[in-house]
Length: 347
Image (cartoon, rainbow, N blue to C red; front, side):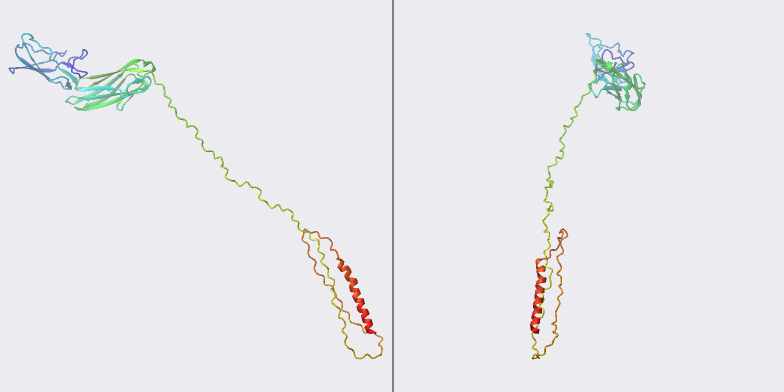
């Protein structure tokens, strides 16, 4: 009878025997005998007869689960009156598993231990306690237990799960990192789950610690400067003011109005009324000494307004035209002629 820690159905050297496990023996004549295992896990049915077939049945202790058949049979002969192969293995009803979901461990890099506790028995387990002992190599300052767990600051992390129902499981975890010096060696870690109603279960993890990972510099692709189109002013035909013939007032020769000698109209001699001869009565030969004065019409010369010169024109003195100089003697001549004619008529 043994405690099958690795649950493989084979008794390993380190796996201890179970004491107090009850067994029954029934022969082919239906005779029944019973016994229990001792402190080393051994049991014995003495005084059995050869030539008969015997069946041994084991009663699974509370808090355990059989890892081998619970009923085994043997036939004793004169050549083999004893059979010491009828062994029974049991694993604790409280089982524990430990794993590292992240795989390999690199020094100084955080990793996670996942611990799962199960009740594989058919009875309720109480007072369940999980204790994980962190051996040398783990940096205490990096240890972080999952909720419900407590760390003593040195090497032990514990969880009190109290009751664990049949078939139930519960998982806890530890996040930690190793020291630099742990690189190049194996890291061993042991966890124990215990209960008031079942034998303790153990699990360990052994892993090689690799040198710290070099930070991989992921080349952040510095975008090669995409030529942000600097608006090179596509010469929007900014009308380069090609000198629009700004009419530079080229002095348009404003004809300097040299005063057109506006003939100062000397009175156009309005013909002095030519004396139409009014037939006088037959002249009396009496000479009247007083000559009858013929009426003289005086003509006042109305000056024609001379053109006002444009302001730019500096008026040059109005030349008195030759015509006006000639006019006065001509008028005088006409006057003289009239007088002479009057005198002739008078006579």
